[in-house]
Amino acid sequence: MQSTPDRPSWLELPEIESPWGTLCYAQNDDSLPFTLARTYFVRDIPAAAARGGHSHRRNREVVFCIHGACTLWLYDREGRELRFRLEQPRRGAYVPPGWWVELGDYSEAAMTLVMASQNYDEADYIRDPEEFFHAAPYPDPVYRPRP
Image 1 (cartoon, rainbow, N blue to C red):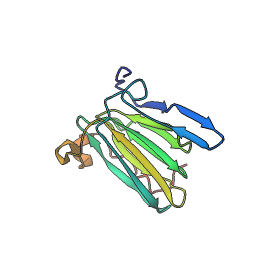
Image 2 (cartoon, rainbow, N blue to C red; image 1 turned 60 degrees about the vertical axis):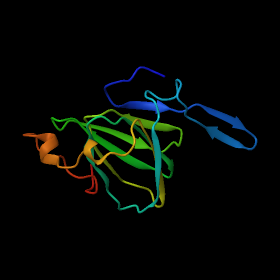
Image 3 (spheres, rainbow, N blue to C red; image 1 turned 180 degrees about the vertical axis):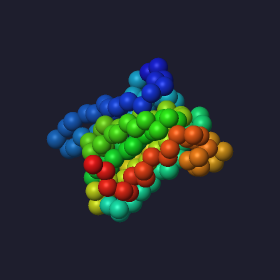
Image 4 (cartoon, rainbow, N blue to C red; image 1 turned 90 degrees about the vertical axis):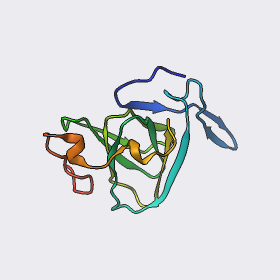
């Protein structure tokens, strides 16, 4: 397992190409910066959808768009933005705890896959932007057009 970074970053899964297709994989070795506890996917996402709207206290994730494309916006507590355009299935964005997550700008019928360091725990979520950002202004939600 890789060391666990404290800042968001790109992560590329290993892949094996063959005449029968390309296999991308992750396992608890150098593929992920944490021990994998949970995997889930969201499919048939409408292009106008806005997802996310939360932060995690402890959970670490890698977010992939394995069909189509979408944009992942991450904000620190001061409202500074990092943006990841997810459009290559093997390339995901690592999201450490303490970052506000927004997803949008989907292509039609996109599919995202998330690998997480913890099982689902509602107590790990911060869903109130005022609690997360404190005095900093809450960024525009992703479903608004961006320049």
